[in-house]
Amino acid sequence: MISPNLEAQIVSTNTKDLGQFEHVVFLGIYNAERFIPKIGKWLPNLRFGDSALVIADNASTDNSLEMVTELALKSPVPYAVVRNTQNYGGYGNLAVNLEHLQ
Image (cartoon, rainbow, N blue to C red; front, top):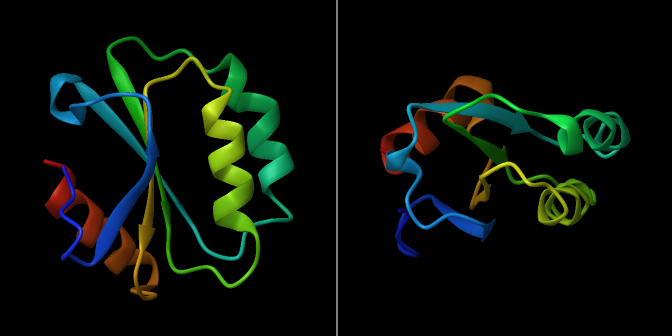
């Protein structure tokens, strides 16, 4: 799990250990509030076996984090919503969160 003193923090989760899943699907977002309604259409119906979803907000300045957290709370899919303390770019967002979610 992510420690509060690292570069990212878990904002919301419905699972205690992401390491228990065979696969973890990563969705990185940054100022994506215009796309969140589209995510909301497919997220409730998402089924992918022994997998979990990590949504990593890359220090958005809009309402992306709040919107995606609200959607994830309604999802039956195991998930973690993570917020980076600063913007690391696309690759950095993935790298920071993969390092700490293993």
